[in-house]
Length: 371
Image 1: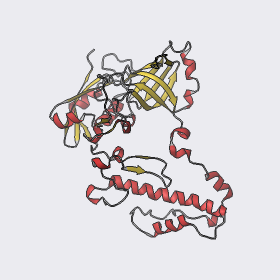
Image 2: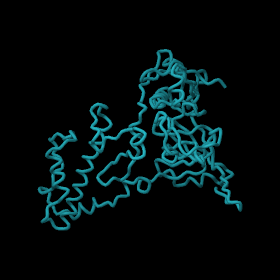
Image 3: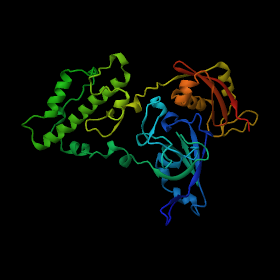
Image 4: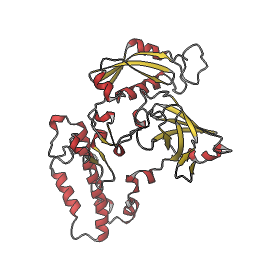
């Protein structure tokens, strides 16, 4: 609820507060996709609606929701025009080109999977929000509106109905017994692609329209393969003069972008998918594995062993821990100045201790949180 005041101020009233498997900022994923096993719930406040469950009618038809929330644990409320995202390892970029919590209006946006709804409570997974976070609004995720690619005019059905080709004349994109060419270099297929893009001059307008759809598919596949090579090739194999190969130097951060699809549905900064901070391997000591197996699922009746509040068991906890640590949750300061220090974080009801080595993180202890 937004209340406009005469003084020009805007006041917000939270619709609810998050209950989450993350109780503190330390170790909480910076993005929801990092830890799909994380779980949380959101109860709509009765002070917002007399019948809060009525506000959720119809939302069960959606698989994901947008959550708009407030970064209430920012500490000092100062902010700067340029920030240093941890994934950029100390390089500065404009705050509005990042999702940094330290911004003039400390609003957060996350996309969570909606597992189920019970009365006035939403049960979520794949969250990156700590317990107690005030939620200002929720909205259903609708790919047709929220994803640029799906907003493309859909001509596929029209093409199927008006295609000038018979089954025997249908252009062959790739035979079932043919091996795909993924070299990314000049070849006959790329030559054919250029010829197809140009189009025969004696085609009718409807034929050109049908052929254009096939060309779009070919071009998009070719572009996708090249992008995949960009992320898998070793640094010494990269061609610096190739338009797809972008450097992560400071003077190129603002201009480097990745483009997917022949029509360039959207672009992103190159460092998002190819950051200078590499993913880490995650491993557990034998004692840590044994300690983690002592935890039981949240719905068990066993009161003699430590019990999770949100997670469904040790296997889900392992997946969550690996997701968190593989993305290296340390700040730049800890990564560079405190390399020999132990790292502590909590997950659900587990208190986890680990250390970081060269290219890996190792969990050494898992204990129940002391209440």
